Image (tube, rainbow, N blue to C red; front, side, top):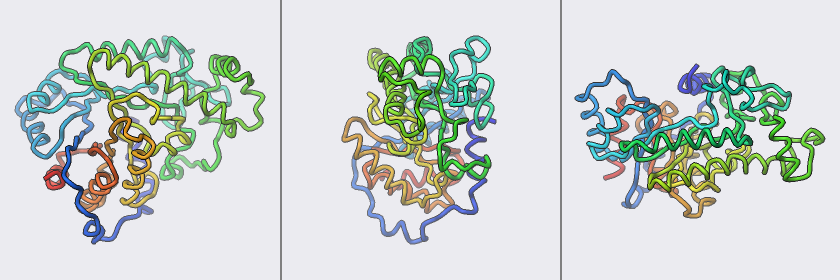
Length: 357
């Protein structure tokens, strides 16, 4: 099961309980004042695409108001075709969720509170293989990956995804699909309790994590894990900035949700922009929650770097809802939007073009 199938499974599991706005909700939203926006789209480049197809696609993106593309894989012809149409071309990189080292360095993988390793006991789905951020060798490996990507002249920047711990709490829309009740933190999904993490935590705080009666309630243990991710991310930011290239990240929808669900403290990263995945259907929220999430994120960022609202196209039931989602994001302080889904289906490009006019 790949990432898109994981997302689709959760969406289908809860589609009967999705909430929607009334059809006249968009009329109650004031159009955002004209200001310079930057809009993005996530893409998995298809090697079968012809130059003609690429030129047509990226020209249409540019005309509609898309400014930059996150490419999930390296494909020079796609990157250069996008750049030829005036778009920025960024490489989208999976960060801590990586399976390629399982047989070579199984000791690098995170362990849950039961002592089970992601190397041979992946949680939820088979591709969930999470590296431990406490290990210096993991940080060095990721630094080399980013360096190698950014050394390519056709790459304008790096976009980090899965830059966190495994979900200790899934979005509520997925609970039924995986037959889970995550109103409390379950040991099987609580990471990382490997020897390196335990040792570093004890050195830093003087506490043996195994002695904690309620580890989920330990603020020091939580802060330690935030700091682990922060340290690695900011080292990757330094590499990007030394190379005069941009670095962004896909993150959980709000600072509060990110810290609680995946130990992700993204307001303390030294990025050039952030794309919170404000997938309202995952959390059984109305389209208007997109505005609430953007407002919370921009409040805590306090202008440190721009926020681009990540919108999952399959969450929207109509063109009108897509328009509402864009408007809610921009009205509440987003510097643009980033789309996940098939941009060539439906009227998304036309709607974006209207909203950017």
